[in-house]
Figure 1: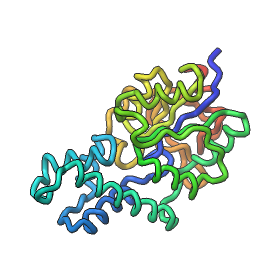
Figure 2: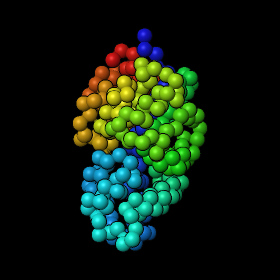
Figure 3: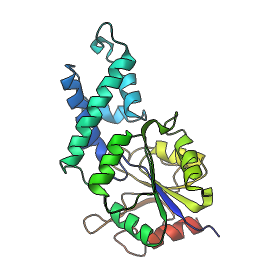
Length: 254
């Protein structure tokens, strides 16, 4: 029998809906500080989200669409590195301001899992400083067992490297782990590492091809937001939200 021993969460878009009102805003603030006449609107940022990793996103943009913004005598790598440092500091300030909130059901599921002695991990391409700030500000009462963030791996999702590393760190088999993601890239990475994955979509990812996911839902749900099952065999005991018992059954049976 497959026994669930760990749940691995993506961060951006999964734990916190950071992209639209967090990362995008911080990128634009960093561009302004740097003196660049660049602003990513929601549609442009949606396009850029197909590229995993903030530094990679900026490098692609300035290389393919914004070469005129690269100052003479400065390499694109140096410019992106400097921008990303500023962007991370600005993003952390946004987190500390309290403007960003956990997605529905995240803390509830984590707390239920800890009561059952399950391991909780976070696997993200987000900068480690930003990830740690989110944990400190929003999840300080949850004992996070594993944080893999930023450049801890060479290849970003959809490459499965971060999930292979997570399996090694928690010392568990693939059949003992469930992943919760928000995107097609995350689902592909999870499945490529042999892990079952539940996707909770958001406004940026709801139209992506989620055929690699084992199940797709709108959110884990809470008193404010009802869980709607989009695809997959996840069964809910409560009509409104996902409970840990639902995830355990989903992991074992499907």
